[in-house]
Length: 269
Image 1 (cartoon, one colour):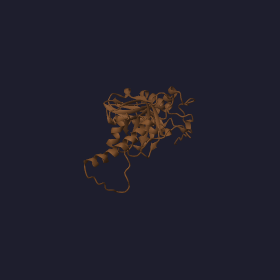
Image 2 (cartoon, one colour; image 1 turned 90 degrees about the horizontal axis):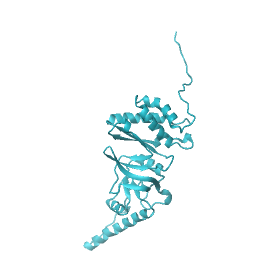
Image 3 (cartoon, rainbow, N blue to C red; image 1 turned 60 degrees about the vertical axis):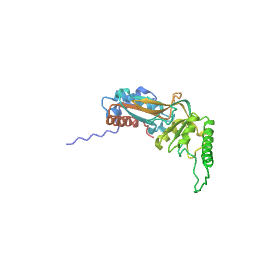
């Protein structure tokens, strides 16, 4: 005879306070251990802290996508750490690498003067005409970048191409320039800083400017990483777990374990 047993519910832990790090960490250990057995004691507190940092007042609005993972080869799993902010695994453009009290503008379009829709011919008779033609273009770009700098912006994020002339004048205006081609990463950055991705190149409105405590390029494991940090806030909208390990395959496994654990913190709606 077959014995059939039906279990309506199986409860191992019950949380009364979703902001209790030790309690949340204990709940996540089984989920993380299922993917990376033996490493749950190290990974569970990181995942718990990351989830608590981004937990909104209404827990049902918790968004798992706001827990980001940056994989940096080198060192060991025990050297992984949590960043209250956003980590972009690429260097900045130009010579400016560190900005305190960052005011950020994000352009979803190319950072260059817009071209006309119709074609035209320019007749240049001598060297002076050629010099004046390029000079007028430089003056227009200089004016545009100065207008951006006058709003207080000191960090510029470009999703697409950026002209060398625009880069030159940004350097002169002491504006840190970062290229971020991924629209998903741009969306996370905008959520963290409160910036608006602009479809036009020009001076932003005050409500379109994002803020961060600092934006800096830090070398982690020999890889330049641009970090946007919001340490002054008790709770931030995006947090990043920086995973360290010796091989790329192990980093992929660790990421799956972290995502598996973080998904368990999402409350049922």
